[in-house]
Amino acid sequence: MGAGSVPRAFRDALVALRRSGIAVVIASQSPRGRVMARRLFTDHGFVVSDNLSPRKARILLMLALTRTRDPAEIQRIFSEY
View 1 (cartoon, one colour):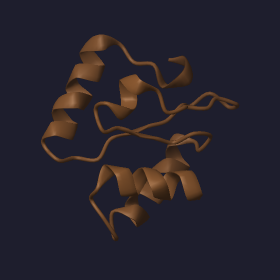
View 2 (spheres, one colour; view 1 turned 30 degrees about the vertical axis):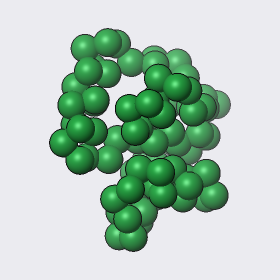
View 3 (cartoon, one colour; view 1 turned 135 degrees about the vertical axis):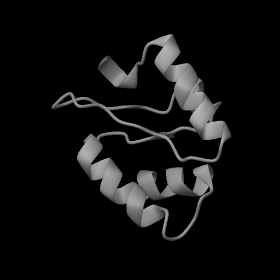
View 4 (cartoon, helix red, strand yellow; view 1 turned 90 degrees about the vertical axis):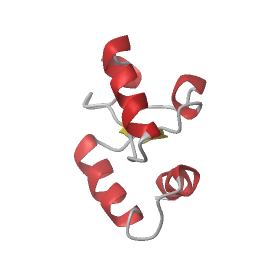
């Protein structure tokens, strides 16, 4: 879906994962797509990938998780790199 939008049932599953402590990164597979920090995402503690593809976001998340599990710090890392 565009801009990282997801169907409600899928989003509810992601919220449940986040509540259990699993990091959730929202990324878009659109070649020129960006996922911006929207309240819908940030309120649930999701990290947004901005312009990183899902593959690149996965690599950055793996690196970030070697340093922290805090969603705010992971988002800072995504914003910086």
